[in-house]
Image (tube, rainbow, N blue to C red; front, side):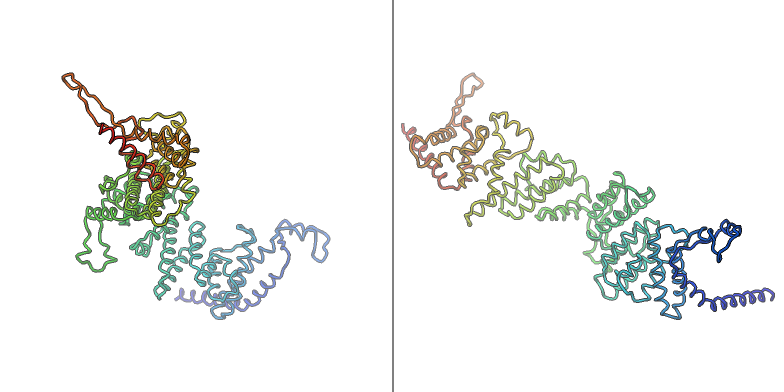
Length: 637
């Protein structure tokens, strides 16, 4: 009974105090509002300055020399504290007097403005910044903003402004920035996500990706603060896409500065990336994460290799959360069946992006296969095989080989559009790591452009662009391979020290191209003499160009025609070769192709098939007719 009386007395005493305070509240508010009208700094006396005042004998209306000394409180700090106190008082009155929220907003926003002016470490005012942000957030919601700047005084206000104006990209940028500054409360961030989810469920389907991005930002924030990852994030990852994985990696990279972050934060992020890889079934996404720069810096090579090995061992499984009813066709296939299906797609597709994606998936499933051997129709020139197969990275080696092989096949079937796409992708890939392969691809693209133009002129008959002619000249002058068995000049030897693999067919096509388009002046006068001596196609091309250039002309000017005749006759000459048999007798082997000519007859025939210029073909026909007549006479005799 005594205890109850004591509690009752305390309650009555508290009520009396509150009653007095309520009665005096109006006067207190009035005093605080008057304080905001002060325009100068305040000086508060200390014990020392009070002693000085007492010791002074002369007083003049209470003012002495010591009146302006003591503890100085700046006007801004005093106004800041008063505005905060008034704002909280008016906010508490808002439940019964809604107009009080407007006054509260005015004073609280003024407090934020003054805090920004004073700096991060005020001396005489005590403001709970988190509570102030909460008050400003509440006022922004409970009142109508008078302008955009008013909402943007605080981070919370900026968030509400973005939601109201449907500026969701701005909202995501704020959350990404906050992952480093940590100015927003986690509870507030999750409340924003709940609001967005509710809006999405009410029919705004465009907010699904916004929800995923905000959820990703919150998840990475939780990871860095060592909080539990929400179920909602795992639900969103049930249907991962390349875009979502890319954004999630971007969030991780922007939320943690690896050069300045503490080791503890790095360990948390590394653990999160490992868990993320283990939760994904698609090898392409696991490869995307494990090959990302952040993952490569946070995880050791052994850890990343272990992740990939674990992923390869996991067999594909049906996701029951996305497929409520399992039917016969939903039963997961074995890994070998999946690999076979992907290899079949790899053979059929000519899209460079799809080829790369399939190879990533295949290498994610198995590490002991060479997928450039899948089709026996994939062939690259022998001179290129060594340099391509010496690429250490298996995925890059397969990709370069297949892109080049498919490009060559596309040229054969005259599908020049796909060939150009395949070659361009291959050129972009090899440029990053091999100058030698880059020059190889440039040469092959030159051959592609020559073939494409040759195929098109049958209908159009247009001259080639100047750029193509210039590239052909550049190849003949700088990238011309010497003929096997020929002697090299010192200048040409220096050019070949670059050890760039070259194909003779490119030289043939370039020389034929120049003859077909009557670039006789260049072949006759401008091409370097050393190249003429070192390559039979250039020599033959120069003789043909000079002969055609001089036709018709006086007999004494036809020396080049005589030289051309001598070269052709040498090619068609047969040499008798002798071989000593076991008993010592000499056996005569006739009709062996002579090596005295600048090229074999079969090579000459192949080269002639590339020519289309009437004058060049007429010149060759006249030579062959004359040669045929001479041979017929010799046989008759």
